[in-house]
Length: 280
Image (cartoon, rainbow, N blue to C red; front, side):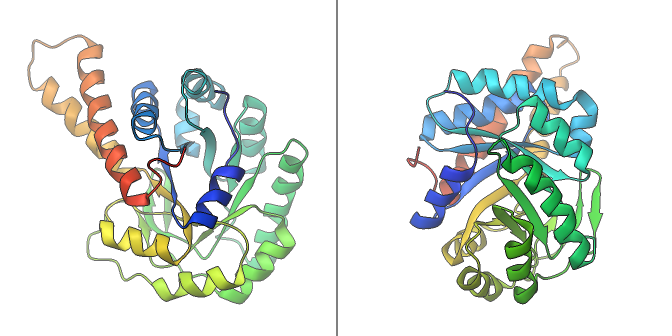
């Protein structure tokens, strides 16, 4: 089927108290793995690219890969720009055919974040594409993103939702990008509080390395979309290295298949934790 937006899939997740898995892709094999996992589990799925990934190959090439796979799939597939860092990048993603975009103005003062996000929302609303915004930063380092983090202030989140026009909201509750060096201290009660104050579906960034129980608890409290990135890269790379330990291997398909298989199994396990299996 054709690519879809995240609107219906996240609203349904919000109503039925599960989350849609959102997985960052770096190449064709990872995109294949994620959509194969979604088909096997009958799960809706979101594929994402970050700014540095887009700089590597461009929005159009990534979109073409995912769109071609989605046309052959029998589950809803959305293509999302993760952590868009400029208006121009959001324009590029929109023109390429992305069906969801995130603009991350979380490092800005609240007034500037609202204005920055609203500008992107006004552009995307003209063509029916939903926008994810962020308030209260997710810490750590992922890709070329690095931040000290900070919890979302509920009253600011309410104003952010009302004045920006966003569809979904990434919230800061103690998670961090990248693998955790120590056990994270999650403010789960904050998720419960925000759920009672917001209508926007809430997004959890920095889920790689969280325990399954922590992810499930965050979802039960109101998270509707969970992002996974670092652990997918790690699984793909580990599988490739194992194949390349044999110096006689020179066919890229050999290690591509191994990486694809590893990512597919990881994605399936994360979909089950999110509770989106069987929801397509």
